[in-house]
Image (cartoon, rainbow, N blue to C red; front, side, top):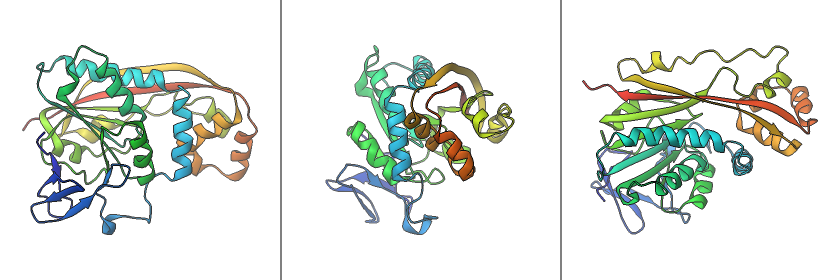
Length: 287
């Protein structure tokens, strides 16, 4: 398979070697024993270990492996299947999970495509996250996926090399996504709907207002246009303090609440809440 990887040092094409990757200028990136490659340059780190830490990743994995977000994952898979249905059959298709975390969504997407009538041999899968700990966990889900540690603002792919990018509750960089997507490429972003995590939010805040409408369309202006938007909305009941705290650790609220509020959440052993997620699909602007 032709390499689409770009050296983060000199921007030259990078090819696979027996031990990792190397570009024409001999910049070398060795694969870790788990199989992933770290493209995050030391001088571009803003902290010693950027991204989610080990405890947060373990919380996310426990929560997701209990099936609480399977319906959301199914909605993402259906959205991407719809994108793929309009593509020429048999053509090579490259898919990136940008901000892949511990690999839950990409693993389930790959499995969904594998069970469909599409030829699995024409697909290549890539997962990128800035957290080394997240990517280490992702390799445990599927060693055949191309997993990388890298920043969302400096992705290790050459220009116009990917067919589909999807992004779930992660930072978005429209200019970088536009750079690496092909001209007919699609971008699917899963982001909070108006009532997302109501129930938990009502415990945290005296008045839990609905989430404001996303400004993604304005952010994407000139680079992407909105193709369609779907909503995944269902009720969820958590039945233990452990599940509730695992969910809290996955959210920005974990960092933003004070000790007394966290203690209040810790005392809960049941919690009913809304999962309310919008999936916005954007088409790359051709110009």
